[in-house]
Image (tube, rainbow over all chains, first blue to last red; front, side, top):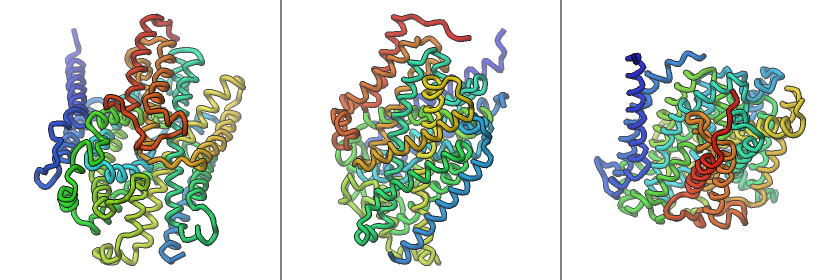
Length: 76
Length: 512
């Protein structure tokens, strides 16, 4: 029988990886085309606001990954 | 020389003295073994590890090149800067298995790990060759920045003495960096990187504050840019040179290539453990990206409003021009700042120097390890003692510094950003073999070697003939076939060759 904690962690790892791939495509890749216009949103250029939005998403992924994976290794 | 320049010179001098002290401290504390000299005894804590990874990643490209790129290409550059977040995530993702393998088998260089996994010296030479191409290119870029600073500080002396300040600066920066790298090894390099990392972060913040005091708030700067040239607020930018496809393929290069460079690989070995690498991901990925996103667009686009006609060849000197030209009445908005301005501007110059030296020292140190452990020991003196390995590495630093200085003095004055793109394109070629070695483990030795060679040849061919003729092409001559950056062309062909030859040759037996 699969250890439920391991299965949960594996699922979380897959979800975080998926979000990161989407974030990469949206922030640095073809997703930029969605906001590629020389206009503003709240006095900020669209492309700049887009970058900050994805910055927040990736920050969230990084913090979740740190709390669940990177801070729990016991090899030190 | 004016009083202001004298004060700036004294601040820079104090900084160089501090480096000498740290170099001496590292020398005193370094044991005789090559593991201590090259990977600091594998015991670095998270603060030094994060700052040395950051300082190695954030070179003169961050403080001079990226603002210059915003000036030339507009706001679209932000997508390539955001990729620093993904580079940060690579620290624990790639770093943890690399750290474990290093701890288990005593690896010091990246080629040692490849040679152990795939077997044979061909992969060792191929990986070292790609690593050396990255390191030499990056060191050239960093010492050029030293030349720019000296040109700024001592331009008035050039006419009276006939000395070329750029050449003197290049040589001085290279010599000081080589000196503390030779004496203190990884400890000196990491400690100086930590100080340099803090300095460069302060410098980036300070420069953007100065631009805001001078030109206006970010909202004002963006609105003015929009009025004068709206094409600067979207891709492909005013010159049409930065389409989405180039931004994307360049980002792939920066996310992976920069973290596969030999110096970062050695920092993964040097960490005290995986938790240290996890914490470093937050500092590198979140903190540094936030600072880059906040500061560089303000400096680059604000600088464009003030210097719209600055030619592409001088874009790297934008920050130096701002520090030089900011009118006193704007600085005086903050009480007391105008009196302290000569010292502060000296600190800004020091920050630029710190950015350059922190990357140059890491690459020189990594190259010395490669020379000692991947060339000297396996091919020249297999029975070399630990002390001999350290000595060979130290001689290697002198030799490699000489090569880098010679390349600059022979006349390579291309844009810092372009040289960085070229360097990460070399390191990016290590990605297929690295992913196979760490996670997949199905590739063959011949596939890995031939893939690497094919990737490097492809990136040279796709970058255009000038690379073959005059060492480095200029930005304008950059060729990006089908809108794909040449580094990614190398990666595509490298991966295809790696997979094809692996399928033909079959998986070889692995060492246990």
